[in-house]
Image 1 (cartoon, rainbow, N blue to C red):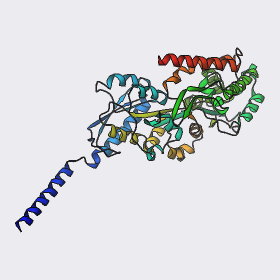
Image 2 (image 1 turned 180 degrees about the horizontal axis):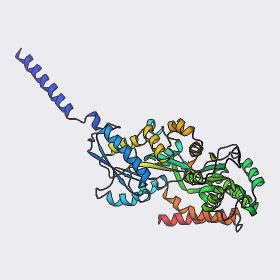
Image 3 (image 1 turned 120 degrees about the vertical axis):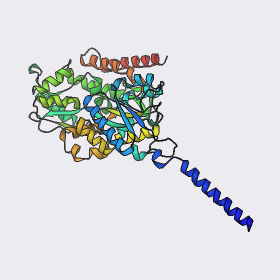
Image 4 (image 1 turned 90 degrees about the horizontal axis):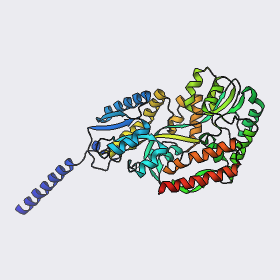
Length: 420
């Protein structure tokens, strides 16, 4: 009997001790959104946000909302978008960096190589909320490093008094341009910076050219497609437009914007950054995706801004939780309403606030069909050679074949020098 009582007493002590141990573990609210870890709830998270006044105000408003929900103070520090990497490389190791940082996606590769950001630990239930191209932009070497909050692309902007409906095909657009264009009077049916690689990439891509070969989310920088048959065909097409004087050889952004605001350009290929200027000029315009080429929607370059978790953050789980809050449906809807930046969330692209706005929806549709600029460091060696090649072709100084072959040779040499 005494033995039985002793055994029951021992079992009771074990049970009590076990409950005490369980009570000492991390509470559910202390593990952050991803859970499964022992990361304690921090008192504060630091965010570096772009120093644009309107964008900064919105980020701070969202930070306050997160504070109410989580009980964590969020300090938002204004830092120029293009200077955050440099600052993080200095402040991070010294323990003065941020938990969340942001910059354009084409800087991601360099940040990963420098060890400034960490891969995200989120599933497809999170990444699947965004357009595939936006997630691709924030993926490097097969791993997702951030969540997107803004996407932008060029599209067709047309003066409704001069062009009643946007053409459905590129051939129709060029036919319209041939009938409307009067170079001597500086009147154009279609106008854009044709000699600028950023703007003319859609034509190269549509005809089979590419920058670097991509496979499974990884970029092969040794496989360049800027002088293949498709790329040469694209430049031959572009060269024809210049020979027929459908485009002015020395067209700049000022040329494009000036003539469109004067009502001398029926349609331009430009980005959302031009909208306010056109509105102030009193032009009655609309925006549409670029017309189809050979039955397919052409892909333009898209730019994506994302949030990233600093590699130096001591609170990566909670930083990820804050990132998910910043890129949630309500947060990005508010950001769009206050900043005009187009969100890459699928559900918001179908929201009436965006879908019923013809200007915004035109850019959004084209962005959803776009392709992100390569985010590898080698991309920095592409712009100048290929830009010069297109300029030479526009000026009639070189054939498309010669110009592109020379450009690719130079790109290879510059990439090789970069690696040494």
